[in-house]
Length: 264
Image 1 (tube, rainbow, N blue to C red):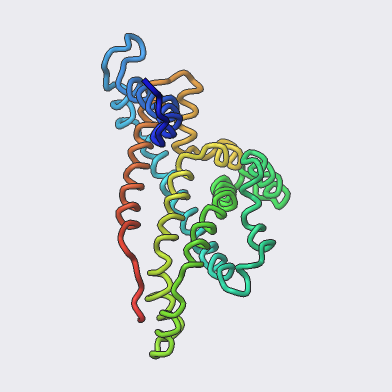
Image 2: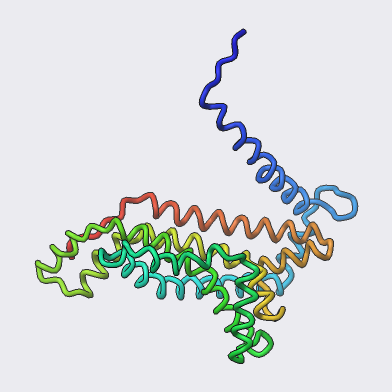
């Protein structure tokens, strides 16, 4: 029998990769989350500990609070930057665009260490100002992930709609809120998706910049596994996965809609 190569065979490496690095780890997380640490039998002890421990709920609330604030600050800073970069007089300036992309090329740990040294030099240490130091570090590290999707969306804005709205008597503020923002909504949703949950699951930034004074979900999972509490760490990771899936489901539903701004 003669072997005939088909294009579907290109998917085999991807299937193997998914099986080894996504499906198998998820199976072990689910197994440890609902098994007894001693006997290995089915157990909800990890779930009971999670839902009866006030510290766990505090960690989730702190993680959500910092993630939401980081996302909002990144959007407030990143939106006007992306809007300016997308203008005709700037969107061909490769150097200017690269200034905002280059931090993504630097090692994550190195960026965090450099941020810590700068904050220490100006007196904003994690020991005295753990929340402020962590928030600054989060914004610095995740700002490029907000600018890039917004910039890509801004390049595709239908500026003729804005001009038409202005010609019909709309003020610049009306044009911005009723036309520009609706048109750029896909970029905003992508920016939120790429910032909100990664901030919650981060543990290097909060651990290094707050000097251990702030614990996020990522820190909690890391500490559980570091202390050989596999069941507790797995269940916390499962909760984080559920939050990620809910976020993706919520943003995906919005993203698939055709969002178009009116004239005004």
